[in-house]
Amino acid sequence: MLYTLTNELLTVTVSDYGAEVVSITRRDDGCEYIWQGDERFWTEHAPWLFPICSNLYQKKYTYEGKTYEMGLHGFARFSVFEAKQTSDTSVTFTLTDSEATRTVYPFAFSFNVTYTLKDNHLCETLTVTNCGDGMLPFSLGAHPGFAIPFGGKGAFEDYYLCFPEACYPDEIVLGDTLLNTGRKRAYPLDGARKLHLERRMFAIDGVFLDNVPHEVTLMSDTSERRVTLQYPDMPYLGMWSSSDPDCHLICVEPWYGLPSYENAVDDFATKNDMLRLLPHDAKTFDITLILE
Image (tube, rainbow, N blue to C red; front, side, top):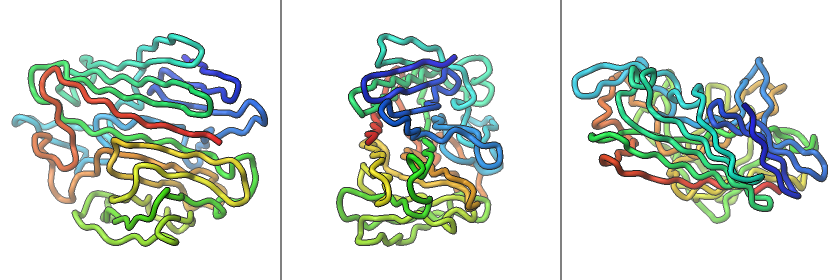
């Protein structure tokens, strides 16, 4: 089922399938910010990655002596959330553990996603609660896809990511299987602030960075339309697209989590870059999209 948030500036459409934003349009000129899907490249729009980000080695992990299997980015993006719309500008989605989730992830949890539209800001509040009596290990990531060029002005290569201050990021080096090698390397930016989009960046997969500010703007000098992402609780930022020149998609992805290391099945009690909640504890994450 689809839910609509609207104000004088924007119309936002969100699905209970994955609690995923499927459209953000301007009311004045109809500009669509969100990728609308294409079977040749990617059919999703802005999925949530939970309870893992990226892949596990052999798609397996262990916990307390048992082995489990879980696919890319976890199961939240393929789950139907319970929805409650409280106003024209706010809706909350909730996913809780079930018999199906416990076969791949043996933990009691609640995952809430609240969207609130304020002027030209879409505020996304994510809360993960440990509903069980043991430790809750999880990772969490955003995967919004943006349809560039915004408003049809310019080309893919005109766009860049601009950080609000100088920074000197490290790239997370992935291996041929797109798992974590444990290595990092410097990823210089233009003027220490700009990352220009190039098709060759996505010939194998994407680019994942550490040591960046918690805000970035996707923009072009050919268009007045832009999107700023603020993600104060996420330590990593990824970019993903296709190298095909016919693909007009860029995903800008704040993550708390990374792929498994190569050649080792992880134990979720010790896996790298996972959060762990004590029994009946909760953690909240805020991501804001500023749409200009």
